[in-house]
Length: 259
Figure (cartoon, rainbow, N blue to C red):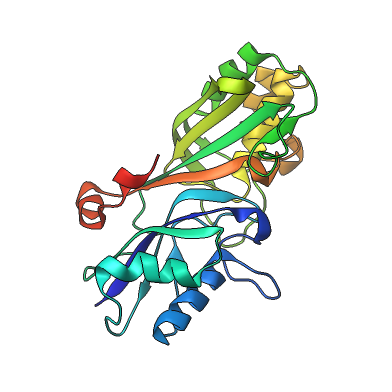
């Protein structure tokens, strides 16, 4: 069993997400085209996180089964990058000979979301521009309400591929960066379709005084998508890191490169 595993960063602005779709350009499609150009092999790259249209990544992990080694391991990243668009970059790549599924072997995923006021034109694709005033202390306060195990049906979009709407959130917090940029960090064992954007949307509404804490808490119990706030824009969302069991992380050796 031989596979290639990659650590990938990408600017999702011009893509319809990770997963291949009809009549739309995706990261997975570009990866497979690049590998075929490089080796003439057709492969199926499986990603750890199915990022949506416009969502970015600093730490996507993907792998594909291959028939034979045609590129030296120390040249994979350089060679693949030469065939990829300049908004997709392989940070690390290696051949692996153990059973590995980037998605199903993941034990947690970490995402960041960025908000700002008067966002520069040079940051407009990566930071959501707040068009109204918010109460900073309320924004910081409400994040902890999502910690622990909850059913997140209310704060998600319908996705028939997902059968389990229960998630365990181990980290949910905001911090303020220079230039009045707010950074949200969330880590969970599992995410639903649109979930993070829904959570950011309801937190913004709370910080604007449009929702109450009791209202948000009750929304968990009712499991009704009609009780969600508007979804935050995709452009502020980044997949930061995929977590695996220690033995898998040691074999991959990817994460020292993620900033």
